[in-house]
Structures are given as structure tokens and as C-alpha cells.
Image 1 (cartoon, rainbow, N blue to C red):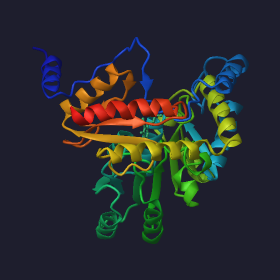
Image 2: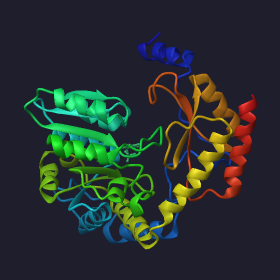
Image 3: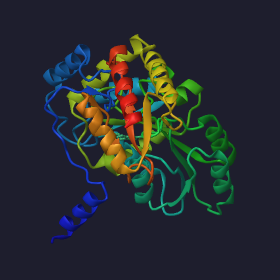
Image 4: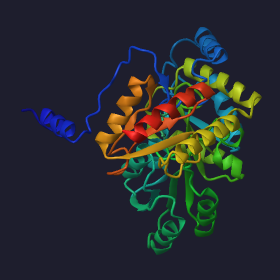
Length: 370
Ligand SMILES: Cc1ncc(COP(=O)(O)O)c(C=O)c1O
């Protein structure tokens, strides 16, 4: 048996095999990150089409060669404004942003302090940077402070955290982390992938708290409904990333269609700043109903609402049950989440009506008694 077949069989036996699925019937989608339902919005599609008509299908090269369009720079100015930071730089995706930012900021003499539940792109960026990586207990600022203060490193100290955690939907204690970073002279990088467009009138959690970390990373692929990533920071850090982020330097600029779509999404977010608020209110009501039924939704305080199922086979059978009832809520299993905490991950979006959430609640009532 080939090495890959043996490994795949092992994963299957553990209930951890992942497969790409094409679903050929209509399902109520509670697994999408298209939080504001903008991916199919007329204006977003129109701006993407206009950008292709005016600029073509591709950027034609890396931004540092011949691929830098005024469209890129227009979007960067608007992203900086949205997040309340001085400048912004677009990357190929949110994943590539985190790799580019961390590998540029940190090196062999530095230490990265990383929340245990940070997204894989932050984990990989930290490893690739060759810095020493110290992981602190999830959202535990005391543990973080202990690690920072006991570190003997003479290099840079860099604290890295998601703002909204992608699998738990809870929010990092950013005010305390920010104060610690300032008092201990640490750099602070906050990944706002799930918060931009939703929190802080669309600008993210940092903007809602009026704090400016050194770098905010984000994505154009979730609430903004398209594709791409960005880092918001000072003008000098932007220049530094243009020079030192390998995932920026050695790759083609984002295509005009993606930039046009993101500009359209920003127009909508800026013109109706309560979209995110409405979504969070709806999510709180949905979460409350699940809690009343006895489901554990971790510390969710956002549009991402997990329901803990325990072992992987439970999570998969809950998900299959919901799919039969016409609802898509994907099972999330280790290694994406810690062992023993497999779950259904619901994400509320602006496309969901009261009828849709009622349908999920009825199906969950059935699951409860299974
Ligand atoms: C917290 C977080 N950061 C970064 C990313 C990567 O973003 P993208 O999908 O744009 O690569 C994701 C999701 O995929 C995420 O959940």
C-alpha cells in the first residue's frame, strides 16, 4: 500500500478524512463566511465586471514589476480608512497576508507569543519566520504576560492574536493585550479576518475599541464577499512589507475583478454602517436559543456559533442529520480544533431570515433527543 493510501485509511478509521463535496441540491447555507451576503450583491458584481472591462482579467505581474495598478492603491487607501490605520497593503489572500507579515516582522532572534487557537496561517507564519514561538493559553492575558515578562530574548517580542476566533467565535481581550504590548514594548499583530465588515461599523474589533495595533491583517474573502487579503499598518511598515514580505514580492498582484469587487463591497459597508450590528443582534438571538436548549456554544460572541459535539463521529452524524433536513452546517474536527471538541460551526449571515433560523432550531431540537 502506498504511503498516502495508508495514511488516508488511518484518517478514515479515525473519522478524520476530509473530502471535497459537490452538493447538487439546495441547502440553507449556515457554513459560509459570506457574512454580509455581498458575494452575490448586484453592486459588487457590477464593480468586478467594470474593473475587468477597464483593466483586464489579470494584473500581469507582481506589484513591484509591472502589476501595480491605481486600482490596487485606491483599495489600499480605502482599507486603511476603514480599519482606522495609516496605510494598507493588499496580498493574494488572508493566508498569504499572515505568512508575509510574520515572516517579514520576525527572525531567528525574535520571539512570537501566539494564542493557542490562532488561525493556521498565523501558526505557519510564526514557524516560517524562524522566531522562537511561545503559545499562550487561549485568551489568557495573565499567561501571556508571564511568558512575555519571563522571556530573556533581546530581540523583538511580537504578540499575535485573532480578534474573532474562527472556530469558537469568541473575541480576544484586545484592550488588555494592547495595554500589555504597549507597557512591555511588544509589537502587536491582530488578525481581523472574521471581524472586518461586521464589528466596529465594518472596521473590525480594534476600531470598535479605538486601538491601533502595529498591524491588522484581514481578508477580502469573508464579509467582503470576494477574494484577497490585506495588512493595515503605518506607512513605514507598509514600505517594509513591500520590501520584505516574500508572499507579496514574489507573486502576481491581485486581479482587477477582485479589487473591483472589494471596492463595491466597501461602498456598501460604508453606506450602511449598521449591517454588522444587525447581523450581531441576529446571531445573539440564535445563540441564546441554542443555549436555552442546553447546547454548548463555547464563548461565542460573534456571528460564528459553534455547537460542541465532542467526538468527531458525533459531529459528523449531527451534520449529516442537518443536511438531510436541508441545512448545511459543516462538522469541524481535529486537527482544526482541539481533540475532543469536534463541533458544528454555524455562521449567521445577512441572507438568513427568521424562518431559516427557526428551521435550524427545530432540527437541533431533534438532535438533542437523538
Ligand atoms: C482568522 C483567519 N485568518 C486568516 C484566514 C485566511 O483568509 P483567506 O481565506 O483570505 O486566505 C482565515 C480563513 O480562512 C481565518 O479564519
